[in-house]
Length: 119
Figure 1 (cartoon, one colour):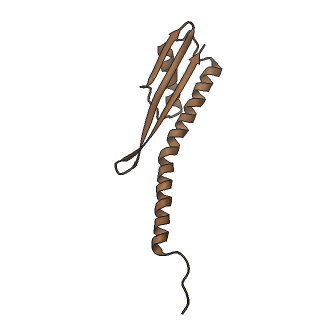
Figure 2 (figure 1 turned 180 degrees about the vertical axis):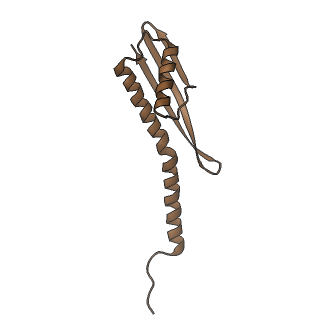
Figure 3 (figure 1 turned 90 degrees about the vertical axis):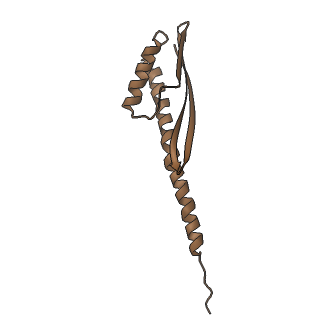
């Protein structure tokens, strides 16, 4: 009698399940980090172009950020943005979280924080 070799049906199914869960997690996590990276580039561009300076108002900062977030199609809310101005420096602290559906009643939550000073 010839001895069988190879993986069983159940082993193949377990491997496919693990690969599927990892792929689903990647699909949920990568876009939120991509949006955060794009936001970092937007903030760097704002520094380089001097669109917002220490003499700009908080309202101007909100307007510029909202326009750039909209033009880059980013899924980020301005709700956690706190901006203050003192002594010619506009300081921005922005803590936000992004919640993405994973499966069933499970969600993946990413928390991000940015601190910028415009002079």
